[in-house]
Length: 255
Image (tube, rainbow, N blue to C red):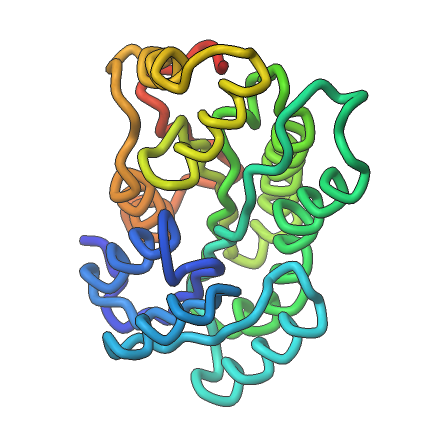
């Protein structure tokens, strides 16, 4: 039913965390998966498990271009591009943020998606029914105090997604975004710690706020995001285009 058997899938930042869970779910669906990551150890682990993996940054255009050349040589075409690369960015009132940290957040969270679409689009056009899945966030539809660069980039992802859906739809290339809520793991733990420091309160208190911000009163699992990515790229979603799909347990306020 998924129609992903033998499909060629690229997942950026796919050797660890949410990206690894996304890659695992595509593999389970029968796809061939290639991951890229700046974490060299994670890349080596991915290679050790038999997965194609390249140590490179999606936020550096020259490295994206080289990767596109490599994938063109090895695969010839690309069925699915998952733009997963992203960082939490700095935490604090906007007037206290370092400009370099602001710029880096935009480089990783939104410019990387532009670079990947730009350089992988020729390969996606060679596929029969290609799909782009961009990772946004619940912060891509809700404001979040102390996280202005992150929120701004994730709103930008949604805008890019909807525009690409319009531009590429006539070619049969779909583009959708995923908007996760808080996902359990080391990254959210670091965010919670930074938020607690900003608020002058305990990690336990902020953890309770993050856990309770969804109606399900729990953090999402990385596999939940992987499942949505697989669905959006599959034949079950052939008429789903330009959507920002929430996987946030019904979150209406972010802390």
